[in-house]
Amino acid sequence: MMKQITSESIRSFEEQLYLNEKSKATVEKYTLALRRLMEYLQGMELTKARLLSYREHLQTQTKAQTVNGALSAIHAYLDFAGWQECKVKLLKVQRQAFLDESRELSEAEYKRLLSAAKNRGNERLYLLMTTICGTGIRVSELEYITVEAAKAGRAEIRMKGKTRIILLQKELRNRLKRYAKERGIESGRIFRTKSGKTLDRSNICHDMKKLCKDAKVEASKVFPHNLRHLFARTFYAVEKNLAHLADVLGHSRIETTRIYVAVSAAAHERMLNRMRLIQ
Image (cartoon, rainbow, N blue to C red):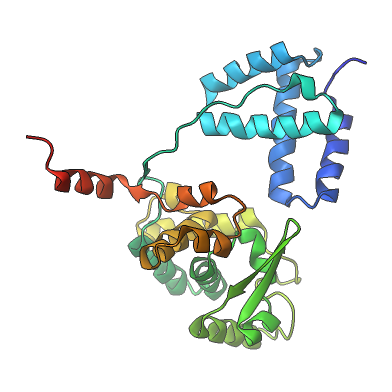
């Protein structure tokens, strides 16, 4: 049988991803990677040689981590289709010893974003950013921040077949309860649209970007996941326990957590200077 990627097979794969409880963001990422591969093949049969050529093509277009992300999505499809013989190796990427400060949000910048949200009278966005940065949850996990969780002081996060407990410190849970009461939210998720639906990731990101000018923060640093990164770095600075942090963040692999706590280039340079090895 000819190994050909079609729109119909991508839809079937998409359905399977949802049945496997993949998040909406993951499904969109995987299907986009497949549609791009389908466009590249232009109706030709998928072979390992052609996937190798596609890998080389991607390398000229984007960074290695992004290439590996696309290949991982394609590999998942190959498993689904039973075409494992077409798989190619991921690119080898050495873990960076320090983070790119131009893309990481600092504590001072975070506080300026909060001030900008407050000055605009956007209390929901102010509290949403505070909740993500104060707990380290993913934006997709905001639905578990409920009135019941605020009253209990803890939220039970259930994602991808795993469950973990997130503590809500006293000041945060008081703010959440007060916000819900003022808006007549008696039960269920606190962060919702006027119609009661879960907030969309892209809308949250768009609203955060609107704060950049007033907060004097580069737009490239402002997106919800960077609040999670800031939580992780701050947590690790207080408690140097990578395994504990991995549990709090919900990471299955501690290698993923290491990425979150890499030191800045400036801090790395200060450490090199203290070594006094350059005469």
